[in-house]
Amino acid sequence: MSSIQLNGLTKKFGNLTAVDNVTLSVGNGELFGLLGPNGAGKTTIINMLTTLLLPTSGSAKIEGYDIEKEADNVRRNIGVIFQEPSLDIHLTGKENLEFHAMMYGMSSNERKKRIIEVLEVVGLLEKADIFVENYSGGMKRRLEIARGLIHHPKVLFLDEPTLGLDAQTRRKIWEYIKDLNKKYALSIVLTTHYMEEADYLCDRIAIMDHGKIVSLDTPANLKNHLEGDIISLEISGKSIEFIDALEKNPEIKTVKNNENSLSITIIDGEKKIPELFLLAQNIGIEIISVNLRKPSLEDVFIQLTGSGIREEAGNKYSHFHAGTRRRLMK
Image (cartoon, rainbow, N blue to C red; front, side, top):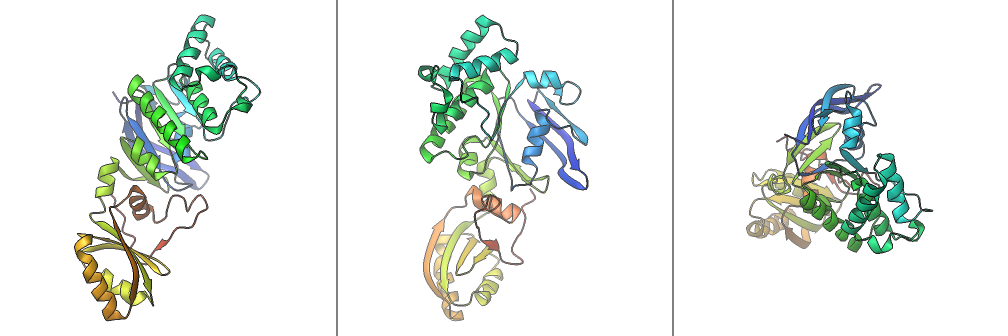
């Protein structure tokens, strides 16, 4: 049986369809990622699955319990770590967990035992009696994970679990998440703006755009969809004629243009570099620098949605040249 099952799940806010007829399943013990630009519908799905929002139509089940008809049973089986911090900084780590465990009706003996267990899991047992206001950002995130585990959930929802943390702390949180998934066979659903995070952690990833799932597969298979290498060229001169010539080459899958730089997806990229230099020379374009690499999850995301995920968060990413945004609806 699947841990999570969505069947035609839809949520509308007036004339806006935030989630549009989504059907998918998450297996027992699976680490599943939801990626998409802001407004794609990720958070709305999470809010429905955690019983914070009612669907407009369709249905969903968590551990066999209907999110509308059996909401109390759903809540008993899930843990949620929200993007925004929700700890009481004027309490100790232990007191935060104690309060949360009491809300789930756990007995005094059970609470004491479980608090020690989850603090050990996230490496905070020695910090249990320190006020949370003195915790680092990484320690606070780990305490929130411990709190989400206190009642033995079977499904854990992580909304941007490492947002705002430094690279070293982020890596440590990744390892905690991996260990939790393996140790407890815990089904985990996460949303993230970090492509490398999704690539490293997730067994499968659903990429969303405009409320729909535009692709769902393993990270490896998603990257294989591009069927080629990525060549980045820094050029001098007008690029329009060069781009038009590139797009006529059947071995070139996409061309992305950003002022004086081009990103080209091409089969056997290493062998094709001399041909690109010759083409540029014939057109009167100077190639200043060249870089070859394998496709990343970021490349796939841009190909599917037409924009970089961090562009939605305020950073600038290059846009596709007209006529080259070919979606991979697989």
